Amino acid sequence: MAGILFIISAPSGSGKSTLVNQLRSLVDNLEFSVSYTTRNPRGSEQQGREYHFTDRGTFEQMIADDDFLEHAEVFGNYYGTAAQSLREAESRGKDLLLDIDVQGAAQVRKKEPGAVSIFVMPPNKDVLTARLRNRSRAEGPVTEETERVIERRLAQAKAEIVKYRQYGYILVNDILDLAVEELAAIVSAERIRRTGREPNEEGRRWIALAEGCRQGNSMARLRPVLASFGLDDEGTVQI
Image (cartoon, rainbow, N blue to C red):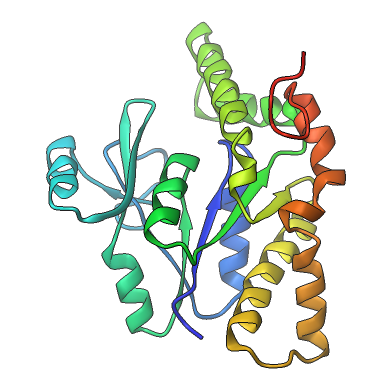
């Protein structure tokens, strides 16, 4: 059954891009929506591959024309998903994967209540800090300004993690191979469920693995992650 919309969100530095790339190499009939953005390309990024890079005027005209399934402004730049991406995927018999932040995910869920939402957690705050710092070093010398950017991204990560209860599935990206397998299981299980057919042995294994990632079944893995950010089980600040 084509036309399933999968939403995946995660704080910057959680390893979401790596997960998505590996998922796309494992799962057939899954298209990845290339978002629009007004930020400048980084490193080896190419037009139309990582993003559709555009200027603010063009982006704002697309907003006025209601061309976006979702859009948001993050750290001074616009990001958005064109509504035509879902229509085009459906016409080709494909499911669609959106890599979007919590703001965008909330917009999409209002427009597409049948969407499957997945939130990726870092292993803990210390690991996320190290990943962000390593990324900054790879892009150039670490300065006071880059340290401020890291602190701002950590604060943003905490603000996003607080929203985890809005998502149906939760992944903790502590072991990459396991997280990839869990992500593939979620896609496979949702496809099986929507066909209404009785699953075979492999299908039952996918369903069992996916069920372990449902929000209500994930607290044992989530609790230490939340605590590392000073949050309790409800995602509120611990006193």
